[in-house]
Image (cartoon, rainbow, N blue to C red; front, side, top):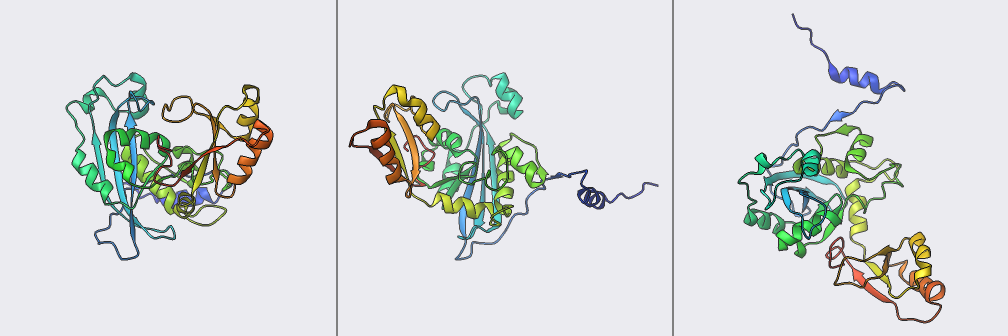
Length: 297
């Protein structure tokens, strides 16, 4: 006779010991059947798997969209539905992409993404979220222009995970630190893992991940361009957090820094006093959630 084993009791016993740490598998979500209340808003969590890292030449091979309700204070109140489709690219999927995602050429053969469904889902949303939005947004906007009409937020860069005690920002690492694991590198699973993280309270601020994300995403920031900065001062700029724009032909080939509203004047003064040593006119670009993480920023 097979004896019943209470795995959860064993897990709790191990958790109570200083010698073990238990990771629980992320369970399938419970979907809500109700219509949105007046105080609820709708977000879409998006994730794509691709043939490579360059949105100008690589292609989407899987897209997942997960819609969920949330309140303005950052509480997630229900997951609505999941959309997940594969796509056959114009070239064979590179071996490295298959190794990372598990998606093979046989799996995507003959597959196409329903553009109308994607458009309807995105149009229904008040906000689009991705974990590493700078990657996902540049890919999806090329295939689905509707994404450009929505404000975006990034759960990787717009939550201060380091200040909360984490040592990294990769999704699988954050999940493990939060006490769960999941089947990685498939779009739907990545979306659901991100929503789970956003629903939980952060270990130091005790606000939900989504609350922290919304607060940061709602802020206006400024891209400050160090056009024509002396070459010999590039290390000074890098040490201060400036990045080089060498690929985006629509923007200056120059160092730039993304500053908050509070940091803007200080950063302009730094450039004038320490870099140019003159009253040079500094180019600035205002950035909101509608432009942030995109090639338009």
